[in-house]
Image (cartoon, rainbow, N blue to C red; front, side, top):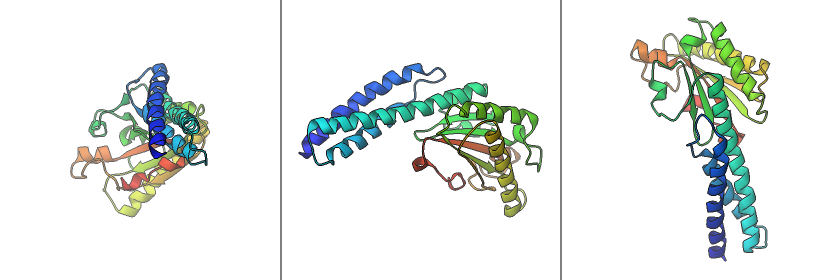
Length: 239
């Protein structure tokens, strides 16, 4: 019986990969990413397990569970891909798969796709004046553009995290990073985004050692996370 279930899961997973490939055809900015396929496979396996545990272990029930679960997984993956591309387009940039993008000092805005969420990085120099928690006008325009995109995805969970360098005390930077994240989150909400929260990380989780002025500039940032559900939500202060 277990072999029969496994065979159905495998066949369904292959089918979901094919469906996912069809779904990705609508992407414009970046259609080479595998999130949709990963979501489809995960959903297919989960659906097959559920279908096979409902008392009737027939191949039809397992296959149906796999197909339904795979379709749901593909939909979630495709939604994240859509959001990443829409956000990048609104910000006048592209979606980056470069693992070193966060260390590029010439990029003030970075949109990154991961298997579980979309991350947007705003460099501090284009966001705030020194020791200020109020976004500058250019930054406000960028935040509003993202917020308007997120209006189309009311189920998306939005998390805003503020980061500083290690200049000054930890507690001063904790307060500053928290106020910056709160102000950005508040502006997202005003622009129409739903399910928005914020967190200040002080100088935790630096992207580079706080040993030079250029590295410290990289560490001063605001990160925005777009999640499909709470199961994949992370604590950005502990990365």
